[in-house]
Length: 307
Image (cartoon, rainbow, N blue to C red; front, side):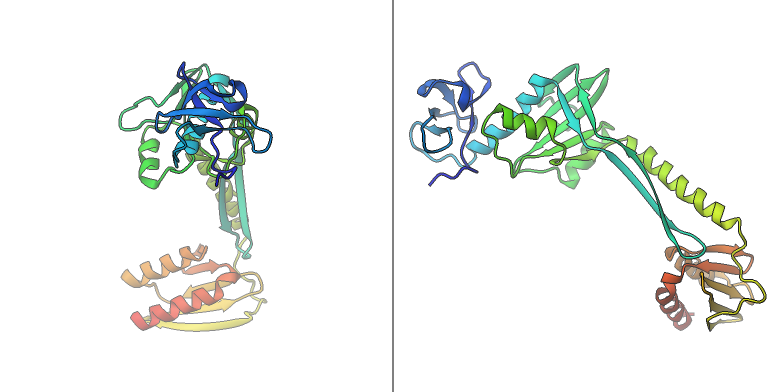
């Protein structure tokens, strides 16, 4: 039994173009074929079911509806030569001295790309994008995903070309005609994601720099407790000749050493503190955010056992 999600609403005309069942004559007069198997289809335009194409022979073609949707989406982008694309977002996070988690985000808003030229399934080196749109000399790759999505191997190949690449997810789309397909492929952005965009690297660098600037501004205030401030809790660890004191204060955790840690011990300590969002606050001092207390003490215990 046919279901609406598997019905074929597009087919290939005798002139080689994709057409909607709503723009052709009824029955065999549509003179269309299935783009998947190449067999003749008829346009069923009754009063009960949604209008759709069906194979004249009555045969079942499992991939017909999906292939037709894929090709119709490609041709639609080529016809209108434009598409709305989602925002680009780069976010960086870090910890301030008092244990506050901060974040900075750099965004490029939703845009509409208008292409000067659109090509379909052109071989470009080792890849064949579904759609290649050119805008004032800048290319964009567009992948239409109905059953097959861009995997990591393909993503790396696409990224190697340094071209912005968009994926349009039509796996759950039911498009009865060009108007509904236009709304979902061209206008909406919810079904789209950036597979690769070279601008993201610069945006991420800007976000990282903004976080580091805020942390640096925070570091300008001496984070070490005053002589009158007492630790809420303390722990002591011995590493060969060095003693490491861990003191918990209301705003952060301070770590200090009596002698310099050396070699693997110092590297392990440095890696642990950095992994917890900590930083150096003096010649023999580190500062770690309060939320990292348990992870810090567990890490120091493991180091104590190892060294």
